[in-house]
Image (tube, rainbow, N blue to C red; front, side, top):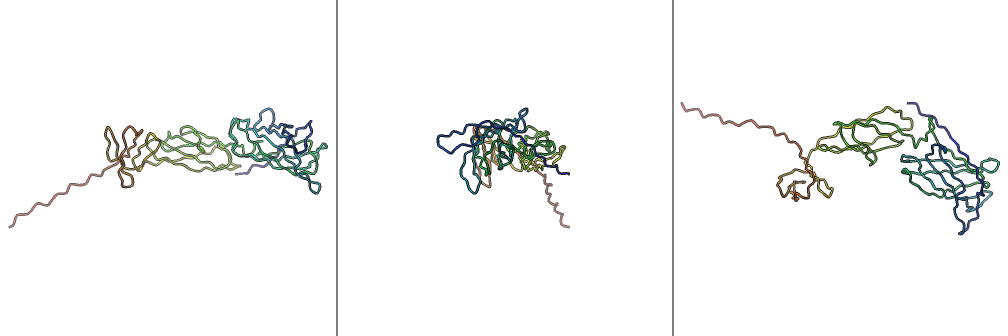
Length: 279
């Protein structure tokens, strides 16, 4: 499979207010720049940078820090995103750059970071660069459709702990490793890891076979599921044997009972040979 080439997309916004402020307890991190990525028409990420504060200076280099508020303005979870932020002076000459990375941002969720960078001058503008694939989508945001089939069908599927419906179905997975979990009444639950690579092509599928239950299952109303051999059931109680020990539970504590089908092989009748009469 041919690996997608890496492109770079830049967004440069001018700043009309002073970018550098003296470090003081009275200073407030008032926003001086708002950046929408990839554009203002259909933004996915909103970055709000505060004033850059000078932390230190050494041999002509300035250590600067700015609070940045990161917001997921898309309708999908962002597991990972990484950007390079370039600092430019008034002549559009690069005077410094740093990396801004965040993880696990749900739709509408915000996170705040302290963005630190070394620069050889005072920045006047910012430029944002992300690593994209050939379709212009960041590798970390790219999703690949995957058809999921189970044997038998009709199993509930969860992807990384989130409900994704009933099989067969199609799920969209981001780059990275995911866990697909399957469950169906009367069958043993199971899970499998799935890795989606950056150069993964759409059209893939995965099939998962659920195993039959090997032991009886009792689901209690408090959420516990017990596996063993149901010995007896009455109107008032249920007895289940777990690891050789019998446990008794009132019927009003039991929500559901799943019994394993047991096939008993009929043993041939034993006949005694008839005694022969003595000659």
